[in-house]
Amino acid sequence: MKKLLSIAFIVFYTATTFAQGSYAPAQENLEQRQKFQDMKFGLFIHWGIYSILGDGEWVMHNKHIPYDSYKRLAGFFTPQQFNAKEWVQFAKSAGMKYITITSRHHDGFSMFGTKFSPYNIVDATPYHKDPLMELARECEKEGIELHFYYSLLDWGRPDYAFGSEIRNGKPVKGDWDSYIQFMKNQLTELITKYRGVKGIWFDGDWERRNVNWHYDEIYGLIHRLNPAIMIGNNHHLAPKDGEDFQMFEKDLPGENHTGFSGDSKIGALPLETCETINGSWGFNINDNTFKSSKQIIHYLVGAAGRNANFLLNIGPMPNGKIQPEFTDTLAIVGKWMQKNSESIYDTRGSYVPPQPWGVITVKGKTQYVHIMQPQGNYIFIPGQKEKVSKAVLLSNSNTLKFKQLPEGVFIYTDGIAMDGVDTVIKLTVD
Image 1: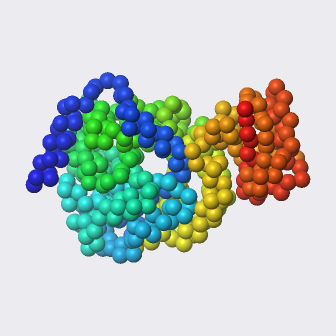
Image 2: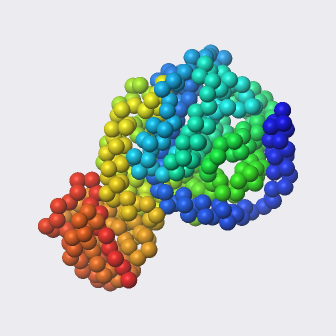
Image 3: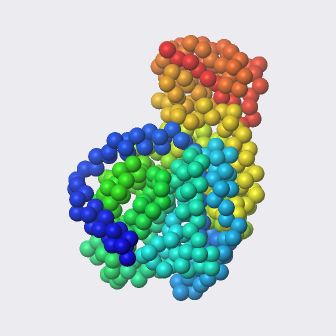
């Protein structure tokens, strides 16, 4: 009871003291943004009771399963083979620096021990353990940063009233104030109970464009509890006041193959793009459209060259294991990262836009030219501003010939063995 009262007090205190108006990030937040951009590569994990059905995280909605029937899945969710250490080592071996995991998805099931809903993994399943607490402890131990995905949308809670008409910023059915308070309570738990959390990844805003989400209160609460926590929202729109990074779903910044990014122009915040390792977010037993290690590396490099992080998603199996197709592929990616990490970590995107041959990442006075699509016996870097003093292959430090003209730099690649995935050339500039 004391813990519940203290959490309620924190929520009330934060909501009443958060300054209204334009958001000014704290120094801790600005420092965290820099660290976030330095990490570059993260693991996204979609895991919940939906994994039992092996048909993705939207199975309840897509198969029109009644909520009361779907909830029975919790009764036989027993991921006895879940091992937080294995998951964290999997991410580290792949070269990933942070993990973002679903704490609660659209089905409303909480994958953590919460006092504000009995519909959670500790109380509603025979497992009776909190995997997110175990993951948080292991992440802290291994130096991997932890972020939580949190769904704004809920298909089952009566106070959310999914499908209800919206009037005056609230659903006609349900109890919107109750639902907002519920989210505040759970977010307070996630931020105060789980050590080392540095990010909240919201999703579901797009289900209700004309509702009042009370972001000023919710974002204010989060930043009050921990100013360093970075807030992102997958609303597919321009960043809103109070957000700390901008995300792009299944598209690199500046691209819009999916249609999600039509109204999401690139802003000034740190950027992140997320993508699936196959075609599904949650575990899908029929989805064999696995991306190759080359495709994943190209996605990672392409994101870094566009000044963005790459968050690669997996959907673990209901027993808590990560399927071997994922582990095998990410092991290859990890070996590539070991050899080429200096061209990815701590870099920023170049003012030179992506080219037909690839992209450029920058770190101080060093530029890393990533040739993913060789064009012949040379490449041309248009608009190179700084004077290039040296060009070498990152793999063996062999010197390359180049010619700098007012319109740009020619780097000659004839006679060198091009890497089948990504040939990285290291330029030293004045």
